[in-house]
Length: 203
Image (cartoon, rainbow, N blue to C red; front, side, top):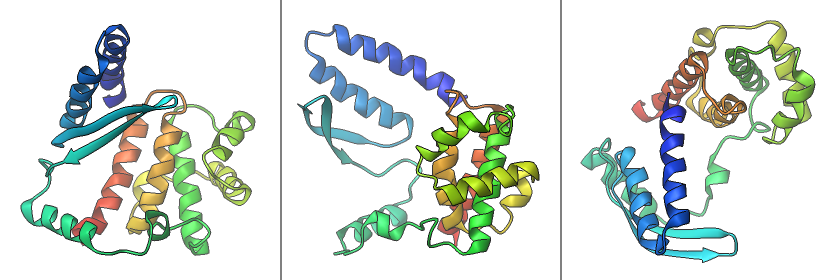
């Protein structure tokens, strides 16, 4: 799985940075290397510490999985004078219809079940962790109800709106990583959601 492959690599590089006399050059190379694993060509143009954080500025080139036409369209979109923020563009749970909210609840319940644990039995421990992810009480009540009548992910993603899939995917990833690993069932469920998001790009 991706998590098991990447984390040991990151850990070894963190140890290398901690032991290096001149960590700046090494970190610049590591950032470019990490993005390179994703097929993204990036150059670090600025690196400095601010408090207990590291601030990095990047110059990013066309990713390997991106066509020239797609890259040009991305550049054109970024160059446009847009007045809306990313948060305004994204679909929020409150703005969804009742039917869409029900889909969200069932999909997140399916992700919880894919962990192999018993989310109903562990609900008392799960609830505060889900609340910390930004889920309100109404959503949690819906998820808890959906856990009692499970539905397979394959059915849930059929004709799923890409915007709803994107909303669910962001939370599903956090849920899948609650135990710091991704099971085969969780990986399959996440890929199904990702495919539903990709339908928006194809369309």
